[in-house]
Amino acid sequence: MFPKIQLLHSGTFQLDGGAMFGMIPKSMWQKKYAADEKNMCIWDLNLLYIEHGERKIIVDTGMGDADSPFMKHFNAELKDWADFLPVSCSEITDVFLTHLHFDHLGGSLTKNDAGETVTRFPNATYWTNKRQWEWAMNPNQKEQASFLPNLLNPLYNSGQLEILELPEDTTQLVEWLPNIHIRRSFGHTEDMMSLDIQTEKNYFIYTADLLPSHAHISLPWVMSFDVRPLVTLEEKKRLYKDVLEKDAVLIFEHDHYCETATLKSGANGRVKMDKKADLSFYF
Image 1 (cartoon, rainbow, N blue to C red):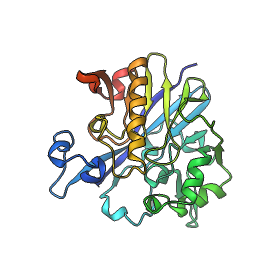
Image 2 (cartoon, one colour):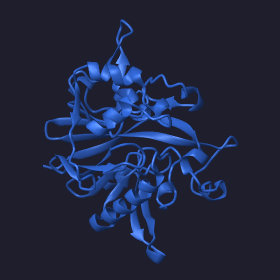
Image 3 (tube, rainbow, N blue to C red):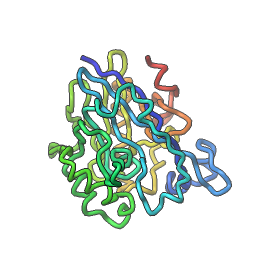
């Protein structure tokens, strides 16, 4: 049995280009990714919907109405992406959270008529892992504004949260469902979970924040948001080795201009983008 996938566009937000491209000079990165006069770049919130047998799965949920102290700086233009779901919210069986930063978790919850924060998908199991959960509940100062107690606490209290105990070997793929495997990384945040997905015709990797856009393919192009940038660099190398071996298609969660890309080997052992396309190209 092979999963079927589609992207859900839940809107856009803006982030400073310097923050997104780290030590790379603007004179270089702006050739790949546009910025306005305030140095702000537009980023998408591209969520993944998967149908796998009886399972109806959402991977990450965007910002929702998350009350971040920095929200006013993001110029977010959000969509009610649930309107684009092929099923109702009550039919969703699983919400897989790559990590618990509010721009990946916020759409998981909503307000009821009494003004209480409740889960948006009442019959779903919400998935995270032990290391990421403990990291989020005891945040470092760099990430503190991204892990919001007003999201984490209601999710925990809902009784719908499943906290995975993942193996000690963090470099190996972990099967979550048949033909869907978890790829773990520690550079952006502790134990982030990307997904490797084998469909009937293609092998896809939903990269989460390991590789937020096509403009981050060059190895040193690492976000300032990453807590361990040198670890990110090594994780990108490991990702690219698998992409080339499996002829995989990368799916970008935050790219405003490019939904997917394939890679090829370039000069001096460097890896380059081969072709970019909308996800629909593969179906």
